[in-house]
Image 1: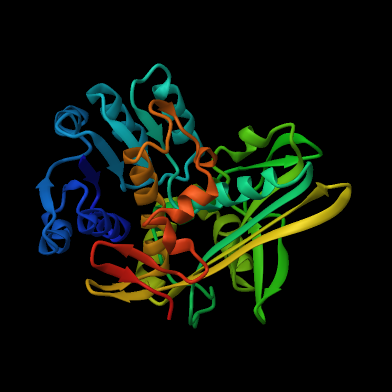
Image 2 (image 1 turned 90 degrees about the vertical axis):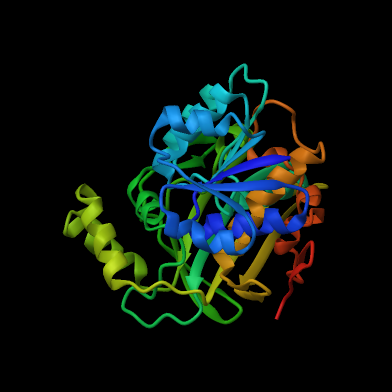
Length: 370
């Protein structure tokens, strides 16, 4: 299967090597920056320098491939999906942007190929896991999804290091969030709904952020009383972000905030992804609760260290592509994450990254729990 991967950044590089090392995909990575392509080229992956903002050039490029995997910033999602539709290619991305997903759903109408956005961690895998828990109940009262990509060793006042896209981070802090309350779909404000909880002896805070639910609200509308998604951080982070975004009004000047964060908040490869999902409801005449919990850490591989957010995000989209190849996905149209059965995902060679023992084998590539 011939794949064009758009974007050679932090996540794109991880996707490229996983798919390439599997031996089942002919992968070409496209980016406008030759320097960004150098590392994936060292791994033996084909590369192409191209201005991805030019829709004509992008469509011409995409037409040479069967599958488009988009690892570009969320602002490019609609353009990349438009090129895929014009070229008759399958389309997968990682976007957390609600508006982009709605536009991609519209593009998918009547398409003869698959359009599957939101294939990362959140949105992505967490929707698959939550949907599986929901199916185990006769009726559902509450679905709570808590997810965080955190530094293992926070040292600054924000108690945060950059582990993924600054664009995506600021975007989820600034846009309204989907939720279900009293059985009705609602929009709630980002950074609100603050709560605290303990897990494995560590205290965390969680608050509303945009995009993590994917299409789950629509899928579960009328089936659950309440459903919400919150990002997990160390205590104190949310207070400082509200100061920056609201008191200093940087929500109205997001580029300045992004520049500040890139300059002052260090990135780290020593991170942990935390997933904590609880579902409560009636089962066999009894009110009960079931929980899905994971902590996934950065790992050393034969290609060097992979951060936890690289592993979980790349595993999500690679598993989705792999399930298409093996006939485990619908063959055309818009596909939501919850269309994948949790068992199918965890049994997949890429999806094993989310297994409790944290083991993924791809070709000679092995990522194992410490």
